[in-house]
Length: 322
Ligand code: TXA
Ligand code: MG
Image 1 (cartoon, helix red, strand yellow):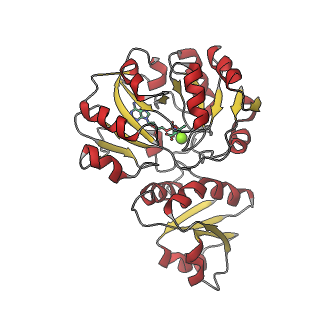
Image 2: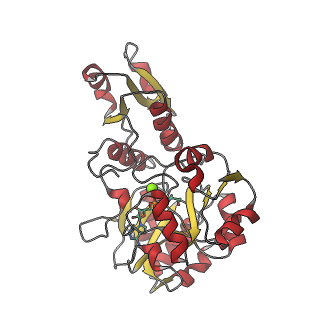
Image 3: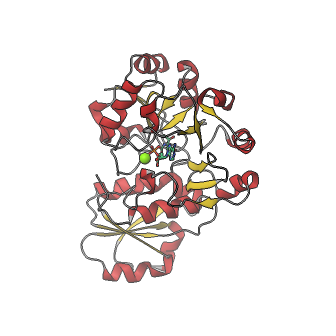
């Protein structure tokens, strides 16, 4: 494994079918040539991810949409024009350039144009699509720095492009436009209101939607047990918890809890700041040997919907974890 800022080196690795971890505005991705089954197979092997779970294909710009998807509805073009580059993934019918392994055999593909300048430089220099899940082992917390990637994947990555800490901090919002009506598969870095302004009200994913690993209850989990509750319930949960207990909450919330009796981990008071720092906070708490993290749920508005979703998943049952 090498780590640096050399785009040409990263492109050379992709061209020979290797793996490049790269920063996006949401989280770091583990990338391979999206048109090559052999290259994409390595992603699944390294992540320990079931092969039926599809990967997102990253593109340099929305103008490339027709190379990677077919039967593109007009609403998808309008949404792409409004939201890309940015933290939104659109599910469409799969085009012929997408390797079958990339979509886990599905006839749809998730497409996204990331805004991060390093991701943009990489995609432009490479020219093709880059298939990339978050650059962590399956079921773990997504990486938001190059250090996180190295700690998780180490020698299994050929090159890590270092672009510093991710600005958004939670994964992209995923909207399925492949089946007639707009369905929200995962809340994320683009707030629901910005999408609904173009699509109209989003339906919630139902059983007919394809299984997405990000929708497993156990996903995005740190080692410590996570309990996610409304801020008012935090003191009661602290009193009931055993072991080394930490509270994860906006800084201002701690003013109401002068005698908390737990390790205090402050997040910013604004939801965008919470999203940006959430995963690093969970990693820090794990590293400090905490047994229980009691997290205060933010209001579901704006990025609060994604922060709450990730906290509740981290608090979910662990039986699906691999
Ligand atoms: O922000 C992000 O989306 C990051 C960065 C690297 O772009 N990527 C990411 O990838 O979070 P991953 O693989 O960790 O999560 C992608 C989610 C998975 O839950 C996957 O099942 C779903 O997207 N997905 C991808 N293609 C799909 C498809 N064709 N149909 C339904 N779900 C799909
Ligand atoms: Mg992931």
